[in-house]
Length: 138
Image 1: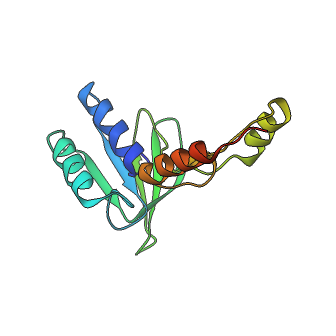
Image 2: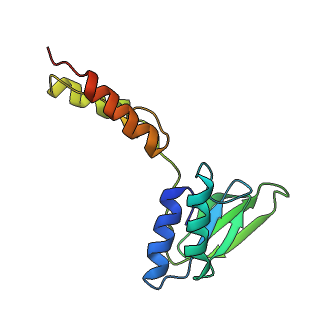
């Protein structure tokens, strides 16, 4: 699992529950960047029983048929890690081009959540509610 935000951690847990051996890679010094502390604690407890191998402070630099290449962000040393499969959970980015496609086809398009700006679920729900409440199709 490359990336340990909420999507990466939840995906790792599902794969581990299905019997996969999990290796998690995070460029930052700690897993779960941006997660609220109680949620991160719960995710760590859930994942710990599967004993995943963690590579924090490592950046993905390559993928081959049977391994990934990681660079340590501190020492810049390279590590090869065997892997049968690689899942990328590298964050979200708004797709304004997709929103524009909808705007060309539909009269009333309101963009919310990660489609507008990457963030937390609370902000996405709040923005969606506020925009829906203020929506006045002309």
